[in-house]
Amino acid sequence: MTRQKRSAAAPSRRRAEVGSAAFVPPYPPSWFDRLRARLDRLPISPYVVYGIFGLVNFIVLTLVQWREGGYPAGDFRAFHPFFAFWVPFMLGLMHYLDGLAAHAFDTFRPALSATPEESRSLHYRLTTLPSRTASLIGGGLVLANTLLLLMDSLILRPVGRSSLLELGSQLFQVASTPLSEAVTGALVIGIWWISGTFLYHTVHQLRVISRIYSRHTRIRLLHLGPLYTFSRVTQRTTIGILTFFYVFYLTASGFRGQPVLLLLGGILFAMIAAVTFAWPLVGVHRLLVSEKDHLLDENTRRLEAGIADLHGRMDRRNLSRIKDLSAALASLDLERSALARIPTWPWDPGTLRGLVAALIVPIIIWAIQLGAGRLLP
Image (cartoon, rainbow, N blue to C red; front, side, top):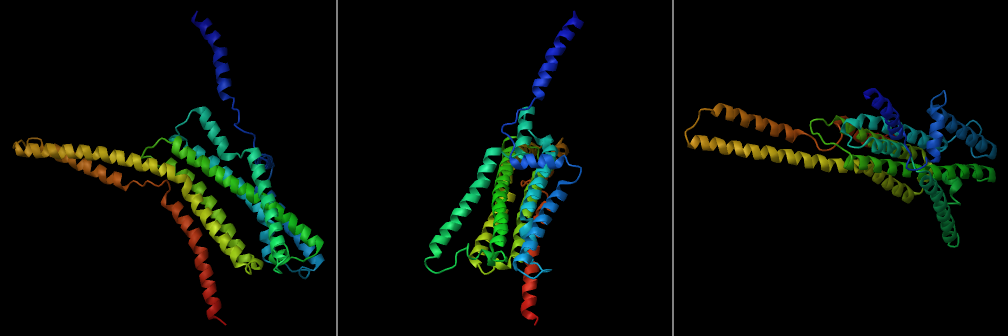
């Protein structure tokens, strides 16, 4: 009978396992996630493909400028490699961040408080964009920028000032011919589309990290290692954004005649970088502070009780076990000191040092170059 019951229960158990193993994604993947999946199946690194894509863009742009007289044959502008690699860089950065986030999620599992179904859903959301929203935001940014350019042209042209459309060849350092402007316009539209996707990718991924930290984290103050893992994702995202802006500023000499655009761009990128690093970590910081305060309160309660016991024994002249009580109070004091030293921000010192270096070192180099340029003839 026992064997029959076991054999009868086996199919139902297998069906339950299959049912639990089946995962239905909460939404279909975006165009970028489908592209990333195809590139990951190739026998070569996807970053090689992104590099080839950027190189092709640069070759086409350069050949067109040579043909149309944008600059002499054999020459090129420092901004154009950046311009040509803008889209591949953002594609590669999103690809890298998704892989880093997946690895971080696996490292975070010891601190994860979630059912298997919730865990799969969180992993999917962390590394996959919703198809419809990603397309709407990418297309929406293209449409919004197009309308802004048209409005700028309609407003400035009647008053005799040059609009951004008329300044396009100067800003992008290209020839003002139909072929040159068509190639440049195609690259710009691609940049708008991928920039919208990248911004949405950043916001979406950081929101999921914030959700994991605030809703699905098992807090253990003496085991903080897993909690640090997502700070590396936010750090690398921030460094990627800062690197992009620094290279743009160094190479985009055509935009230096538009200080308002550069100032607004710098403020925007600085705000995005700061929010990118800190925002997802605020939720778990609050949880760590709350848990730390709770343990410190427990320690204080025991310490107060021990001190009261010590005073009572001294008043009663009962000092028979005073050494044990003194040792207990010393242990509580050591515990309090150890708890006070536990950090409540979920990053290790190396992560923060790397971010500060990425922020400050280029500024120092730029300041040195500026000072040397003014002092030297």
